[in-house]
Length: 250
Image 1: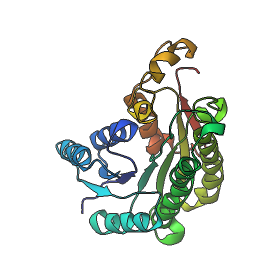
Image 2: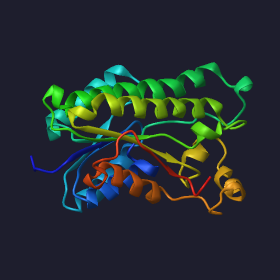
Image 3: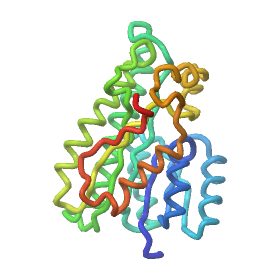
Image 4: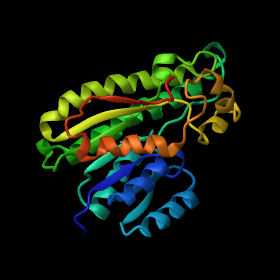
């Protein structure tokens, strides 16, 4: 195994996750791409980043499920050795709507993935990275959202609430593991041009939001990825428990 940093990106086959994988590969990270359904997109991404001279592999796992999380990390252990960097990116909004109209099963699905799944993947990552567990230390970036402070009323308040949990988790976990060689930070994207809006049932949502964004445009996945790469890097060596907005001033 090469002596390169090893990065896992959950939900890494599309959108912000895929942009992060590409940028990290260009910076010299070996890449573990987690995906849940789109194997073709994940494999195409792996082939692309291998052309940059690093190692990469795609791993199917639903990180809302305990058994899948356990298997994912065990496979990464066997393939790459100890994890050194982790981007906790997998998440979903659910369908656009009001809370009083929302399907309870959908609400549970969002919380299972965005909150419980995040905590369990972070637990597994800390066990591999922390010097307390024999790791080398490293850096973790959690994907939050400006929705946590805006509330996302009439869109998906449940998603905003799940990202509020990520804000708390970032601060608490950062303080918990700082002395064990791990830096934990978050990035909070605003309105970004990715597939997430169509998946929520409102593909025109980003375009409509331009009028309330001070920058007068939506953001690109690459702009969020650049913030993530900064926080992963040694350039952010004294940044712990931070939360960087990438929102065009919103």
